[in-house]
Amino acid sequence: MTSAPVSSHNSWLSVAALAFAAFIVNTTEFIPIALLSDIGASFGKNSTETGIMITVYAWVVALCSLPLMLLTRRMERRSLLLWLFAIFILGHIVSVLAWRFEVLLISRTAVALTHAVFWSITASLAVRVAPAGKGNQALGWLGTGTVLAMVLGIPLGRIVGNAYGWRLTLLLIAVLAAVTAWVLAKRLPLLPSLNSGSLGSVPVLLKRKSLLILYAFVTLMVTAHFTAYSYIEPFARDVGGLDPVHITALLLSYGVAGFLGSYVFGRWFARHSRLLFVLFSALLPAILFLLLPLAGQIHAFGLLCLVWGMTIMAVSLAAQSRVLHLADDATDVATAMYSSLYNVGIGGGALLGHHAAGWFGLGHIGVVGGVLSLLALALALWLVWQRDFAAARTSSAA
Image 1 (cartoon, rainbow, N blue to C red):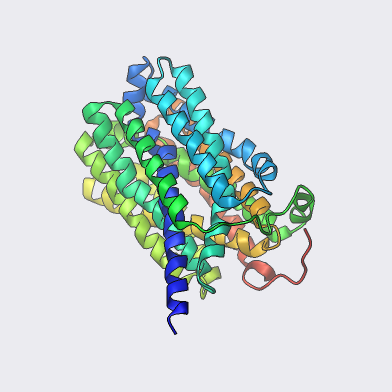
Image 2: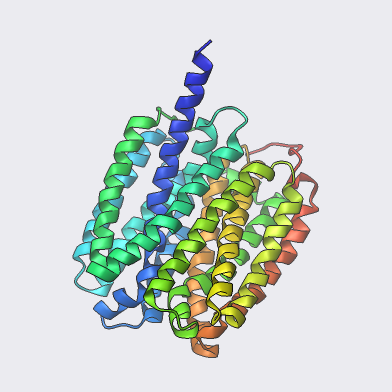
């Protein structure tokens, strides 16, 4: 009579361990966004020049996710995660000691390689270890880990960085990564590779129309988002006229709203997938176009960032859910491709935001991102009318 509850309890502890890992991995990916000005100043560069860190990190993930996933596809997953965190910690130690900007970029590249494998396998692992029928909720927990990176990781990292320097922030991330590795070792069961797919899965997946539309949507949506979000700190400071305390509060409010996005996804997406997918996709262009008009109105701008945080979390989880649905026979390959394209969007958005600021002025990064997000919305509308968007696939290969 007690075995089922115990099993369910242990399953959720395993999901929580993966969510904790997602927290630390996402914190380190996005912490430069909150510290661009300080990092740049220490190497004699301005914030937009320092933004190349974001592009390099993201594009390393984009290029390496699928090849590294294929190289590690037969490895037992718990051991693989522990090896990833060992390299992750070493990369951060080198970052802390970096004496030139180029050394910092190299160390961040090593960290990005671990990120590439982590997000190629973690979504499917969370669904595997969750109690039966609770896959969406498990993905929501992973989203919560990402939200905590926004709510706690990035604002606290900024506070520490402003007070004691950005190097201490990276050192603390390394310490938390060591704690994360311990949590994974204690809580995750042995997880043999399962349904990971192979190189032969790629051409099969690329024949699925809905999956291709979804990949194109993700690339455009993420590029649009990061065109503006990569430079939210200098935008809020120089365009909005906010002081450092208000900027930290703004980043905090953005992150807190991600909890709502994660909750909405986990609670209602399975029953209203088409409606919510379009709604999330339509909110993003509205938000981006309103960035400049509301930049000088602190309360309205704060509310806008709340809606923004909720929207990007919900739409990201929704897209990942559909990837697993449309490629349930080769989940790791499909997720690696998703992670690659997501990071193409992150890097492309950071690069486009850099050029948009130079061409049109920093205040217009939201407008440029908004135009791209309209194209993503058109793809979302096309995607939800595909028969297999919500229904089970009728054939299986790979």
